[in-house]
Amino acid sequence: MFQKNPCGALLATVTNKASLNRLVFLCLLAALISIAGLVMVMAGFVANGHEPDAARYAFIGGGAGFVATALGATFAITLRRLSDEIQSNMLSFASGMMLAASFLSLILPGFDAANSILENKFMAAGTVVLGLALGATLISCLDRFLPHDQVFALSYGTGTGPAGASRVWLFVMAIAIHNFPEGMAVGVGFGGDPELGVSLATAIAIQDVPEGLAVAMALRAIGLSIPVSCLVAAATGVMEPVGAMFGLAVTSGFAISFPLSLGFAAGAMLFVVCNNIIPETCGRGGKGRPGLSLMSGLCVMVFLDAALG
Image (tube, rainbow, N blue to C red; front, top):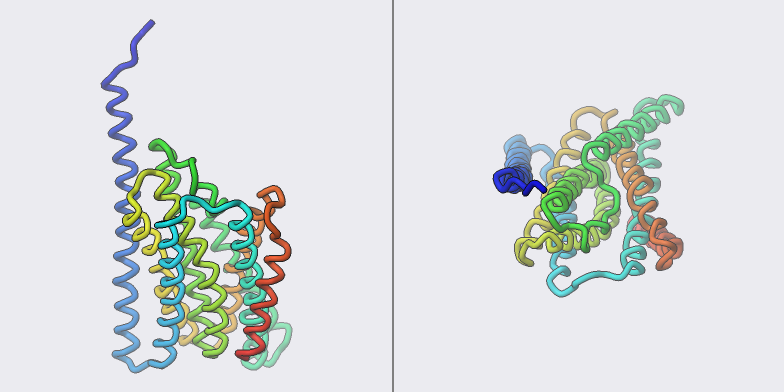
């Protein structure tokens, strides 16, 4: 029998480590670029005196998503794992809130805004539907390259070895990228109506708590220390305020861009919920009460929308 080549094994180990280091570098680079972009956008708003109140509210709303992500990450300090029932209920509750927010706070206001601008119901409907299609297409393309499914599947026991570590880092980057359209939805909301922005920011922030926990637990599973895992998980939420400022900037350009952006944000949110979150909760063998949790989240969002509206 031939013995394994030790040089080949060493080369494979070095290659795997180099690949993982590249992923870490890309994550840090993306965070730095996001922060720099946020500073530049905020500086532009201040320099031009362009709706400073809307800019401040959008930044606070996006920052709420970042804080919620960081809060979820801190739970990883004391929790070793969550039961499937709790995970399923948390995700289902967040799904219900995001579904209600997509229709009540994005699609319906988008129809009203487009109709007031175009004064034609068919063109108004087409504008919002076009935004829906564009938003869903964007998230679908992101999922093709950076899968966002199985939010908690990587959190326990599947991150061992270089291959598992690389998969976890891809998952972390996917979460960070998917946070951008969520933040954009908040910015679009504040660009039209502060009350609309508050309801969207509330729904998305609640959804960000279990996401932050999932990222931190996944990083702990591949051997990172608790502080580093929590910090990296919290950093994925940086894309929320960046997306919020971008969404506000887009809606401030042309009048028709506001209903189009509302449809875009709704399409992105609906695709994430229908393609990623709901299938995962249903794939847990009926553990927990996903249907009841989803309806509870939907009812809470309907109440908030009616009370704040």
